[in-house]
Image (cartoon, rainbow over all chains, first blue to last red):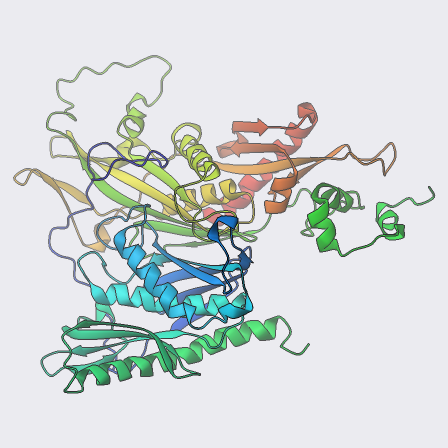
Length: 276
Length: 326
């Protein structure tokens, strides 16, 4: 237990524990989707008016992922940052204290959040025309309000779903901010499950699959470029397992891209179109 | 000067620039020119006495025991309440043979448990990209003071949560453990007056809380909860109260002559108005229109004049919140 944070209001001095139940509560049984069926995504931009650009992403029930992204910039870098001919893109991902099952999350940024922030930054940086904004900073903030399942016990799918949502949502927010991009980034996940390693698109931790391996890609569909690749589990590279899982994830990302396009288009039409 | 209205004076000046530039160059006179119009209108188009309409959405979060999303104008907050269990060291919560001292004039003397054991833990997070000025990292002074004001409201001014509803007792009635309520307010979008919105979100979230039935297991010496959703219970809350915040904008222009307003009391200020006006007033109203707290800071306005305005508007706002939340 770390020392109490004196800048926050702390709980009792004795440790508190989340409720322990009589028998393990059954996980929410999501209606089984077909392996190639994606969940519906609700994506809306401009819900944080003080920000330059923002977006909110929610997966349809029974999935519970909810997150917001806001973008500030391009704004001048502080003098201490030194000269940079390109814009510097920074990304921060934070889980709200009440976002996960099990233990309540702390306010201080932990290793997982640092790791996901870096991955988010890598996934987005390639899509922004950074050369257009010298000496500027673009800051992306993502707050995960609600996760799918627990992410404490190395539930990789839960973490992957949060990151994938963050990438798609943040890309919509960057577009909403009117920052010049070469393409939008959407993220997709595919997994090899069961003994045979059959492929599942957009697997949820609530589906209860026995996941052998999973892959997340950040994908720019317009340019056919992968900006981020994260795989987990044992994948045979020679046998073509690796390629087939990644290809499936790209397929997911391509489908999610249509949602992203719609959200951005809605905004463009709302402000009066490109020409008017 | 033949001009009678303030708007034309600005137009006849040699130098002219768009309103947005005027707002940046001279925020104070920008606000005053708006208010000097008849009828007085704020830059947002509201009249001085209008509060922003609020919307509420409860229990949207799956991992919190209770939650609420409240949006007033461009300020939006999410409040999640999670219950955790604090086990007492053996013998601490015994009621048999305990000497109870009852002081005259002190009602609900037992409710001190909420404070002594810190059973209610409110926090406010602003580092979410909700506004240009707040970055992730340690909370700013403003975030710390607002969290502290919310805590004071919750523990002293409007003691919503009685200790009785948080106690977990064994078969004999000895208190073995407590529920601790972690109340986390995450601000998603900030456009002024975060206190009122955060407080309303806390009240709504507490009302939506459903805690599992907790049983003291004698053999395991631990608290076990019943997972069946039918046995979940709501909290027994005390009388609610709501806050209303105001800023006072002083008129230091000569326009308008004798009968011009000396100052305007602006209800539910947005970020711009909060930055321009230094006089801030918060009134908390309890059930039946009782005034339970008044805070005033800065400014030199005539309190005897401004406070009654604030109080009557705060009562009005109480009714609005009451209609939305209950």
